[in-house]
Image (cartoon, rainbow, N blue to C red):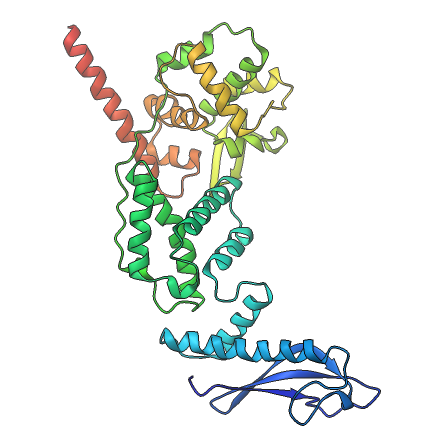
Length: 379
């Protein structure tokens, strides 16, 4: 067991009397170094026996059981390290004790659940992480840190393939789990990261939908009498001409806009990534804001997407409208088609890297090629 010893020590500083209490501690010794760990139990001098047990106390049985469990817990932890060929250190012991206090012990599922709660991410990302945690519980083969191995990751891959409809979804299942496995590895809770040897297949990228200029005009000019549908259209068009994602739309505040060179501009960070974005509020955007006295009628993302389906059908647009389509429309039809450089679009959208923005260029070029083919058949 790596020559780690644990013993109970009472009144280490010799201050206890029959009227003054002192603490019971665990003394952990390793390579001639000692660490004292509190137990939360305090006693008078006549309540501790030479056999290192609590006596003459109303809760003697309870206290002795607690102390026994705490000592056994440390030895179990040392054994777990040894079985994984991980050397014992007092730093690892400290992390184990902190996890024990929060109820995580050696459970990877508890560790993951705790980190999902602690990590500063968007609600949508947190929800996806919770879905993967639920799937992991159903999988059943990865519960503790000792279960994280090559064999179980491969088995999890097969489980995800049966559960998901496409490979890109399987990739996302691994992508999320990989985050927490990497954290466990960095914290020395596991000795190896099996994902270092596991090649992930991203699957085929799903083409990003966007509205053509004709579809955008159709949406803008359609006569709509329903007030709710009208508001949803305005929100969608607002995003088509700003490139904002729904999460950023939901917290939009015109008071944050700064007037420079005759235009109002917003410089902020994306909710999803924190990456800075830089947009100017064009005339069409300002007209929408004026209509609502500069306070957008934002609704929940779920209701928004539900209404967008109805809006698309009402305007006879065959493409499925979602909040993402508006952002994609800005990047392609509004910006790229009108000669805005890809580097500038990247700044407008707040992308973390230029490669993400370049996907829009490929999509737009494919649309151009398709139109040339159509023209060739006509002329």
